[in-house]
Length: 220
Length: 220
DNA sequence: ATTAAATTCTAGGAATAGCTAAAAAATGGT
DNA sequence: ACCATTTTTTAGCTATTCCTAGAATTTAAT
Ligand SMILES: [Mn+2]
Ligand SMILES: [Mn+2]
Ligand SMILES: [Mn+2]
Ligand SMILES: [Mn+2]
Image 1 (tube, rainbow over the protein chains, first blue to last red):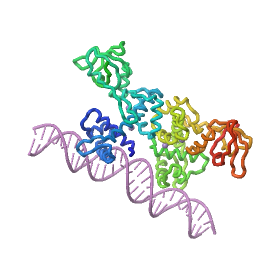
Image 2: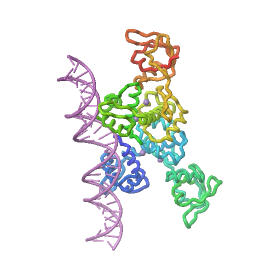
Image 3: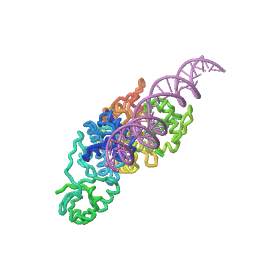
């Protein structure tokens, strides 16, 4: 059973929306996630239901099936491997890779992905810190919390970002908050929720809660 | 002006068919080249005419325009750069790359191609010996003749193949007739047109004219 | 419980790209 | 010049994917 490019994009969006522990994914949520109209989503949900990658009862929610999960993870694996390729080999900046990976993830060739994985030395995380599923769809994810949830004096390492928009990533570049950077929370401002942090033991900066909510930390 | 994947495939086929000095390209030729029906070709020719990448007068022939040429060469450049990547970096065999490159050539990202070209060290030829157009569509091709056209005792170097089918390429692998190999014509059999050649000064083999017509030589 | 608002689905239509069957035009042989 | 054959185009249909407008259904508010 094969999915079209559009079907793969929908399924991936559904997987990501289900991920966050959401009980049910709404038609509107999907529409805004993939920048389309709710009417188009309804159409596609019917088709994905027929292909049995989701369980769909109209007006009520939908649930991704085991098959759907497997296929979504395959596409996500391809997307993230290509992102690693673009950054590690072609020296793309981490905020330039998403659009291109969005196209490359639909190339059909099991051999290509196998070889690419080997060429990149079987990376476990993409440039944004997200885990790369293995060929069976297994994801070994690290326990991590938003920087905003950390307490004063707690330390850790930046391991991922929630938001991958160029604007956000360029801001992080600017302040030196790369993936892998070690940080320590010095203070939390009650008034606006902003956080004062020490980056790599040398630089002190303030980050708004809009920023700290989108930075994920592996505490130590 | 942007072309769809299907339009790019048609235009590429038209370019290749025009290339061989053919005065006019027929609807049937295009249909068999891209494995489709003549009716579908007529439809597409009308569309390509409207987009002004070809000049089309129904029932009469078609002529590729300067714009069409430029776009076709851009796609060919991408196709061949990806083939180099697959062989040089991912260790694909030269008979395994075409299908995948047929997909990769449609990825839209000028930055990607620019970076890929640099990463591969600005290659001038693809794994089958075909020249890679530069970013302006300029092709610097070497003068070359079919092995079949060579005279007895003439020497040269295999620089390209006309046929890129896996069956043909695997045969060449088997007999050691790689691109770059130096060959010398020892004898030509009048009866069936087969040719006796010396490969790399060590191995003597007979090749049928079906084979020698598809091997291109730079004479020395 | 009834109504208002929000959500979701259906109907109908456009664009792309393919097909078969049949009509139209060009070509070739006599 | 005529007729038969080949080539090419058109007509009409299917499938995919998107859209707008409006109907159906659920949800939230009084
Ligand atoms: Mn991405
Ligand atoms: Mn995509
Ligand atoms: Mn090729
Ligand atoms: Mn192609």
